[in-house]
Image (cartoon, rainbow, N blue to C red; front, side, top):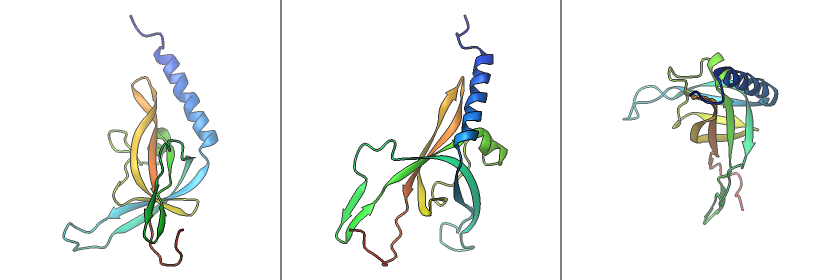
Length: 154
């Protein structure tokens, strides 16, 4: 016996989720995507980036269950994070998925600029599963630590 939820119901669900995403995913961010990188001996070309404008739904501190600040001798480093809800259809339409429908980013070198703050990837996963596949991709971002010497965070 087949499940209670038919393929037609799943298809309708996906359409509703995608329409919802079109309505709420309106936060502009910048994705600094690495195109080329130096080799493992640090020789060759310098790292090259392409800045890509994205529209996404940003969630702030939704999963926070423990302190993320790190105390140092010179002050406190704020490791606050946020996460992005990326619609897979949006990513596909822009050519940003792998052949396995996974967000094609470099977790080591790509950076994301949200409200002027630079973040680095800290984890990712599919979500909002519809039948056998996710509809969204969550990308968890951790605030990038930049030592400028301009001011101390106390």
